[in-house]
Length: 451
Image 1 (cartoon, rainbow, N blue to C red):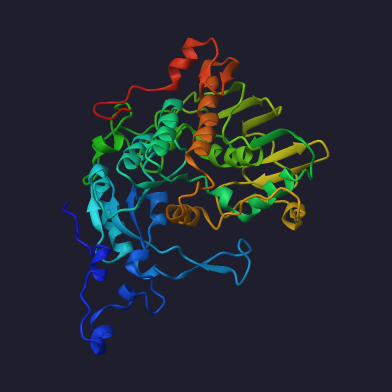
Image 2 (cartoon, helix red, strand yellow):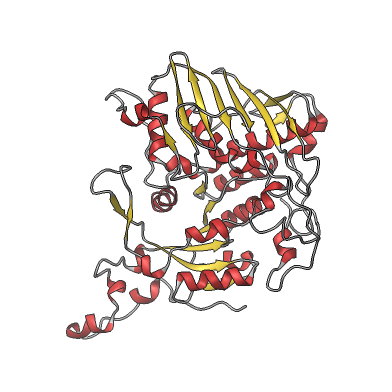
């Protein structure tokens, strides 16, 4: 499909000044920054890779440019802030139906691509939003950094430890802003919990216990031919080849180890992101990890049905537990979350993936003293990313943090697979004295798709 042309940002600015009396009749209000519309020079141009499911929520339709967005209690004031001026100018998906639907939603004449590499060649794009399936996150992010684009990539950041470290290296080498989509950190309630705990309100935290419900096993569905309009070969990309199956692809790939990795790599990337943030562990990891649980005995999915993973951290010493189903909190009712156990109390933080994120009222009511610990309060996850494109500051869920959280999920699955306690070196990012486990830290890729 050929790209649909749209006006470049410099077009309006390049017009010569006509007769003064007729200037406003000849130039659109948006080009001059009038009527509340930002001028093109202030707009951030976004390209979107993967626009089904979660990806649709990131689209910036033409009609919404310059409008205020809700920001209740997060920033104070009247409960709104102006959107960082951004527009979706390019869309890419391997599913033609989803691509057409997204183009209709965006409006105007966005450029349409079936191959993300062509989108990355577009010089007008400032940042890309990657919401393709998890097994694509690393390669797409690295290639986007090489192309000079800033990146918002959905969680989990990566599928292997090697991928995550390569993403961090690429972001640093090419001086790119990379935000990982564990959006709970941008919730005001998560900020309240972090402020409460970091200011010692429950004392030194020794244990964080996460709970979540079990993974599905998947009904046996016959393999089939890919539907018209889906480039299944491109959908698979770097992952091992398996025949197309509707129960394994759109929206359901999460329960396959090679693609999604189960609940721990899905919601675990939210719940444990909050834990790593609160515990100041964005640049380190555990010293040991061990896991128990129940593998799928029947059904077509291969991720753990139930599992319990224990991570031991050092300096400071604390324990992180991921349990599905686990023991829910008695303070707040939720399907998943975590309880932070301190020397002088405990605090519950539920969910961790955006708006549903909540915590106990005592944390929401707390105000840090003037000399206390100040925790950065994000204006919103995508807004924080867009702000950082302009400021070149590090976002709240920068790629190193995203990689460290994804590492927890990956290490948990490896420990579950090997069924023994593993010793981890968080600096070298290798298992100590375990060649078999270290072979699981990377994957070879497939065809042209490899690191």
